[in-house]
Image (cartoon, rainbow, N blue to C red; front, side, top):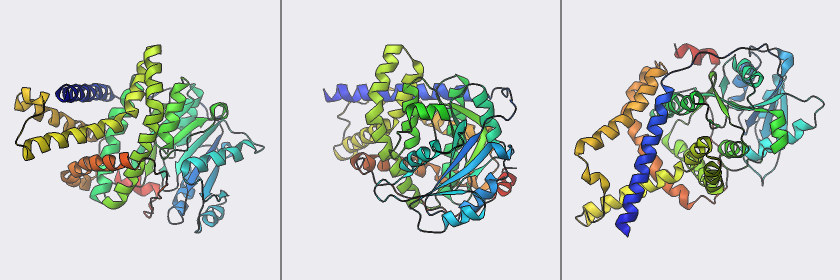
Length: 412
């Protein structure tokens, strides 16, 4: 019985790996640019901030210089439980500082929900709501790109999340490589196939009428994934805009990175538990590949957990008990098959960097440490499984003050 279960799980995990690799191939080609529309849509630009006085000023300067009519967008900074000068800096830039104090309901999801209720009461109603994080920098054409997608009928849009500081440390380089891979071989591939994209927490745009219809309702530790699930359940498929870039600051140290990723995995377990089976059932009932694909994406956290546990069991069986005693399908394949599988996995990351024309010299040097970053997801996910009921939001401190021109000049 144990052998049957083990072999079945190995087959499922192998099929999922092939499934994702096949999808990634559709991101190799970038389609021609879409139709452009006159700037007509109005935007409420929301920035979630908690004690961000060190970086908020750079974003405020950035947002005031967007290539979009000034009368068609307003900036609102959610100063959520701030104890520093974030609100004062926002006001010095002539923008709206919205102060929220709630020691019990902490976190970005709750802050957004509070802010939307405030927005709906304003005399002016906007066509769409755009969301950024306080440590971000935004491409000047961002709202123009969102305007194009809204005019084309899209209701939820995710921009291209790039890294503001990929050369600061081996950890920020690892984040950079991961996001270039995700943007090109996950997001763009699904966009090319007219499937649902997933939201990434920043650089997001939502049609106002949709938010009013279904509400925000995403208050888990991964509010972006939760809202993705909720919208797809209602047949609203988020789209990906490759040309609308937002630059996100990544943690400098492994400790800070592990804490951030632990929060993500804890929230991911919560969302998977809540949405996986309903979405999977919908996909079967409606014969929807789109919903099946998102259900599979939601279950990825369990895929990582199972891979870690099964690998650990095989090692214990072989090293401690002088095995193998447990069935292992990979033992029936030639040794070169395993090397080819590993090689293809590594190749996808290198390929995404080549496709994205990455020119950061230090990032290529840091690639030697990239496997450590990838392997570290396993113990982090394992620990997250046992602490997933911990809903305490943890703040990632941001200190890297960079201007948009500096980021773009480094990109070449």
